[in-house]
Length: 449
Ligand code: NOJ
Image (cartoon, rainbow, N blue to C red; front, side):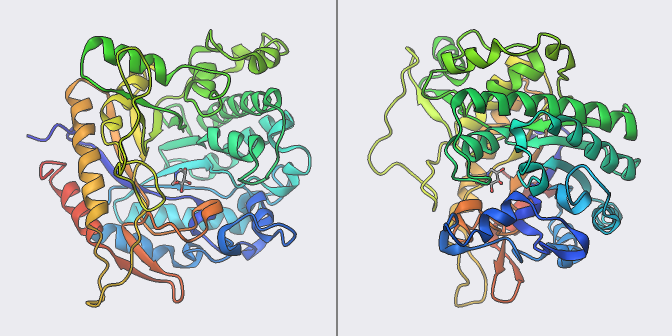
């Protein structure tokens, strides 16, 4: 018997800047990733790559949806390019941009695929960045307005939204260390302000989507962060792992789930926030906490985690530890314990909104793309996930990252996460072995695992 619930939502995910292309098509405004990639004074991206064309899904989305259908995909998590819909972020609406997403949503629905919409996956309109981006509180109202406009147009069609994708990466990489757009490096206190504005923006969007599209529309969020798992499956070791996942040490607080989720779900900061966050927290207007909205569900993006022993100390990885093409450790156990920890702390339904691996994929002599290591990775992670379901996790869906190979941010096109290969010379799509394998997993609701 499969442990996955009967109406489990099996899907795939991607994001606007990573797959759409059409960077200046039909009235779209420039966003911070366009600018970051076009910055000729600095090479921020591997090989100087850009998302100008990417997978060209802006023009080829019908072909992509047909491929999804052919592989039994039930849900497509995609993100909306804010600057395509509102070119300067808070001014006039670009009808062609809205129409593009409406056509995509209609195409998905016509093929029996549920759209899961992420409103922000890092591509902020440049005009808003010029006014300080996430450091300027005006962004809260602008994001709420944009969310309401989008959701109003998709009323009756889109039933599930995520406000923000991985605010942790947008804040820590974009404003902390500067390896992602906008490439700023501000003080930790200011990064804490970025987070606070993101929490308020999430909350404003939560209210706007419900107001425009109906109370029954589900509004979640898709954060990420450090997850840890126990070395031994004992209650004491599980407890130590839980504590390590939500700990906020001064040198490792930015990349945590709770820097975002404690604010919106628990309406407070954790007790152990470091001094820099504490200084910012002291400036927060207490009335802000009343504005926070807990998401209806939590989307958890899971790639890897760290093992801890019963004392909560990290267990060193052995030499030659399994790793992916981009050298991330392969740690399937994190998929068992991580989602349970999130469910336990916040008491909300969980979706896995991303999981997958990059491989050094290529077209073989037989014209196919064989990717047994991806299949093994997904298989291992899904088996671990089924243990969490067996222990009572309220899990509603799983989105594999990613359907197509795509633009992997500062790593450019070197990393291939897709279950469908994209030949960037021609745009041709070639389903990999893993796409056929995943189709079978979906068909059997995980029974074949
Ligand atoms: C997290 C991000 O949301 C996504 O944009 C990225 O491509 C994948 N993980 C893989 O790094």
